[in-house]
Every structure is written in C-alpha cells, then in structure tokens.
Image (cartoon, rainbow, N blue to C red; front, side, top):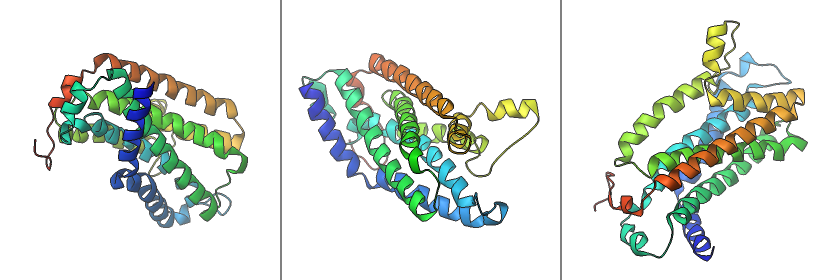
Length: 255
C-alpha cells in the first residue's frame, strides 16, 4: 500500500501540472457549450434553453475523449525517459496500473465538478439537489473510459496512430449520442443505431433523472460503467508488463 501511495502522489502531481489535461477538461467543454448554445439558441425555448442542453451533453463527450489521455498516460514512462526507473523499482504492475488510472480519474472528476458548478451558476442549470448524483455518474464514466484508454495505452507502440484510431469511434459515438445536435427517430433500425453509442445512454440517464425524476436509471447506468471499467482494469493489469515501458514512439521525445 505504501508503494501505491507514493506512486499515486507522483502521478497526481504529473496530472495537475498537465496543462493540456486541465484545459481540455475545463476550458474546452465550457467554450464548446458557449459556442453551440449561442449558435442554436433559437431552436430551444425559455424554460429549457440551448445552454441547458449543451451543458449536459458536452461534458460526457469530453470525458469520453479522456480515453486518449489515459492511453498516453499508460505509456508515459516510455516517452519521458523514466522507463528504467520503473523497470528496476520494487513495485508491482498492479500498483503502476492503479496509480495511473486513479490519478486520471480523480483529476478529470475534479474538472467535472468545476465545469458543472460553472454551468449551474452561469446558465442556471436546474440541478440543485441532483448535483452529486450527476457527479457520481460522470465520475463512473471517467473511470470507465480511463480504464479502457489505459488498457489500450499500456500495450501500444505508437501513440499518434492509436490516437487517430480512437478518435473515429469517439466522434461517431458523440454524434449518435446527440452531443452536437439532438437526434430522435421513430425508425426502429435508426433507434438501434443510436443506442449503440454509450453517450446515448449516459445522456438519457441525466435527462430522465433531472426532468422525470428517474433516479434508478441513472444509478443503473453508473453501475454498468463501473463494472465495465473494473473489467478493463483487470484486463490491463493482467496484460501489462513493465518491460513494455521500454518501447514507445512519440514525436517530440527523443529516446
């Protein structure tokens, strides 16, 4: 446990000093909400505004994109010339994986709280007593997507290639989940296609909880996300070998 605590402290310092991670999970969702909310203001009413809609759907999309950050963090030692330290240090691979995963999840969750407080105050998003339930869902999502990203990243050889591959399904999931524009249909086949996106389920759970009072659905989706994240965490631990830190290719870092 002591080794895990030391590693976690080390990784937490790296994460909160990461300007890209902080900016992408605080500044980017706020700016995107402002932009889309302004452009589509005429498509919504006064009680439920475009800013309310995008405040709820943009944040899960940005959290999903954290999969790319987690993939990078998984192989970070290979790029920052610290691989040999980890290779010879008396630490277990489980401690390495958990430290990286928890540091990403915690920092992204803190960013979520900041963004949600901002949209609540500025856009008057009516979440009041539901604030922490929404945070619980978003934290479960952050854990799930970071675990998937960590699983992918720990075994990758080239971050740029993996990043480009991951981007495609994430953007497709965002479109199907209504992150950029709400999508609804009576067509059964198209409805099935929309439900293939995990963001569809996450967004629906928030709207059903806030506007229909369906608390059970939100917690059910949260539990599913946690279980999926736990599964990928175990897979990452089983698959990972410290020797993989020696191999990695990222433009800008000379080995």
